[in-house]
Image (cartoon, rainbow, N blue to C red; front, side, top):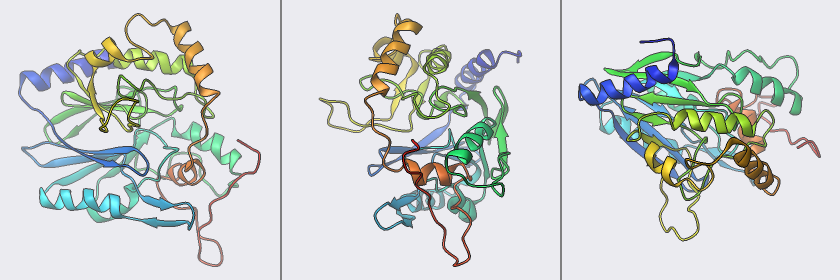
Length: 307
């Protein structure tokens, strides 16, 4: 392996194909939040990672639920898998993570990118959470650095830092596939927004081009799909080649300047995700609810006229 994370990730993909060490993937789609969660596992050792799980949340009542996460739990049990990682691609703004609930049932290290510290600092101020809230990523078991290698059974894996949507976004190359979070959507829907605090359209373009430098046949598993106009089914698996050839925002030939202009103009017309307030407050805490107050109840803050 070289010191170049992208080159190393490419070698992992090529070696996976050459040695026929291919991951199995089972995806779960939560239509309420348009979120795709994935279980990736080594079919030989049965070791698994759960990526971007969803905890149900009703904003009208403030109640949480485990129906979505239980589907993953049931699958893990049915397939006799051993969970070694609970992976988050970033601190999501559109759904609450179910990682702590699943970790309690199944184990596995809870991990996210090391730049979660930046997100905690920014949103810690926005939500005025006070000095008791640790802004050091300690709510997670592991913080991945760019290019860091890990394993899922016999599957070689690597974390790649892909900022732009948020400062902390990570993609996970596992065997010959990659889980890329919100960085890209299906080719007919385009790319992630970059207007959240800490987001940056230039960084997003550079991160996307980095991912699209992986081998063309690399399967890309996405975190969301919103069914582009004219498409009847939800889709959340694509490929580097399909994105390079046909992504409506960032196909080959789109310049950085053109992308930044498009992304900034488009983002000014987007509304905030309706679960942003609860999602970020929970997810920056590693999927845990805010600490209960003296009445034993957790509370979600809504900063008025702040965002």
